[in-house]
Image (cartoon, rainbow over all chains, first blue to last red; front, side):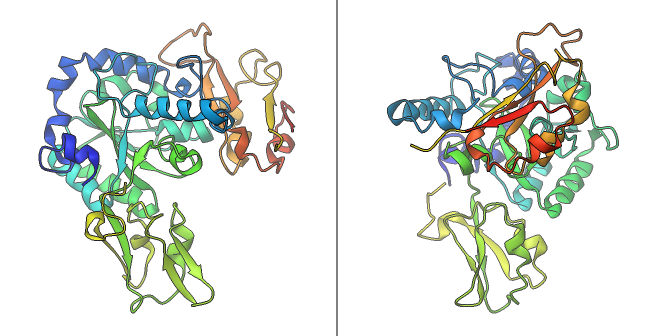
Length: 289
Length: 85
């Protein structure tokens, strides 16, 4: 189990600890006002200055010898912050984890606070100008998002029942979107998104700039070579490039160090050759998130 | 030392200053393979309705990922993008 589970899971995975979804947290930290202010100007979060630095050209700033390390450390410290949320214009305590389909459904069935809504993903909008209704939000978010017209889906249903939310999430997952669950801000969980790389503002900093913005899943994929027919559908679909075709052995190869455990490759495999196993059950990946 | 790529967008041609709303176009956002552009509300601008801002801009957020394919420069209908190394 990852660090977040150990510290905040109360014996379970952190995202299955129902306390994190409670309205009591909203009242305690006045999150209604905080989140309203944050989501009003969400697209600006990368361009606003934090301690004099903003996200523009951050990739070059990270390469500067000493200052680059300090910037990376500051950004990670802000994302992983467990202090009471103070500034809504920064991405404080905004940390998350990849979840496979089964854990996403468990979250929606057991923990997520109603009312649930389906909203247009902000990351897709700010990086592609596209409105795609693949983000499921819970709890106080319905009060906030209904005041922001650009996030309300035009063709899809806005308010969802628990059952509809599960169907929606399953549909997105089977299309090849990565399930992710987020603290926003710590300790409130309100967002189960279906992400894509490179559009996701949580996944891309880790893959392209090595900033620890998201945890790998509690699971990892395993490949059964006996069942695999080398059709390579999984290779073309893996967003983390963990599956490749080994030309010398003429078989599909899985790199367990690159696998994030999102599990979407399983949906495309016609031979059921891919399956999930807990990350901690394999010595090489145990504790490596 | 490798040269840095500088991508600049002329806000006199695209954005709230030019009278062109980037949300209606979004071509550079879509053609860029590594998705290095960002659409955001203009910082510090007076918005008529803070809940539904109408002044938006596009900025090149991660210029190091630019592969110099020039698709954005070629496809921009108002020629607002310049890429220099």
